[in-house]
Amino acid sequence: LDIDVSDMRARLLIIETLIKKRRYYEALDWIESGLEVDTSNEILWCQKGVCLAHIGEVEKSLLFFDNALRLSPGNASIWNAKGTSLLDANEFERALDCFSRALLFEPQKNQYWINKAKCLTCLGNFDDAMAVYNYLLEINRDDADAWFNKGDTYITLGENEKALECFDQVIRIDPSDLTAWNVKENILRILGR
Image (tube, rainbow, N blue to C red; front, side):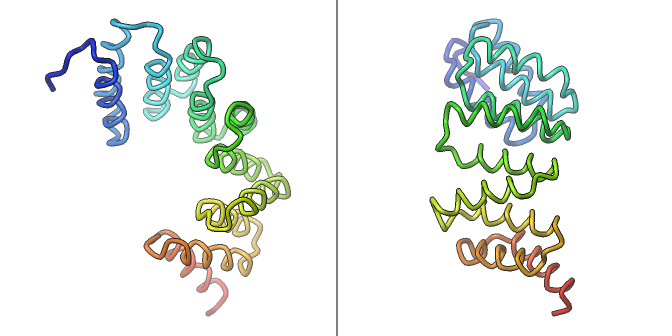
């Protein structure tokens, strides 16, 4: 690609696209060359952490998330990215702390609440996880992600009838959600229907 290397917005867009396409090593090359231009760009440091976590270098990635947070300690999306990397690495307590911090700065962001509830579920704090999902659903009854993850938690608890109700809600909200349809089919099979 031929871009002006001083155009950081273009660089960040390319990096974001590469990450979405799971081309982490290429993204890392772009990040490195970007950091040569601007070492104070917290987004580059965060994206480096994201890429490293995706290629299995979670502990190393934390150094780059921490560097990003030193530059921008109130950046909720960086806290969320760090938490997501820790969640993916089954570091639930540490991830929970990150999501809680993200929510201090952006309490209206549903995804941060859902990530927090996922951690709570993984830690066996099912009542707290359900409280989060119920809170989100009080705000917006058509929150498909909250219904999906609430249903997932019910599956974990072995409460398949309640899980089925949740996945019916997901399908009502988004009939094109193939994963929800597959989960519903599996639940019906388990229930003998």
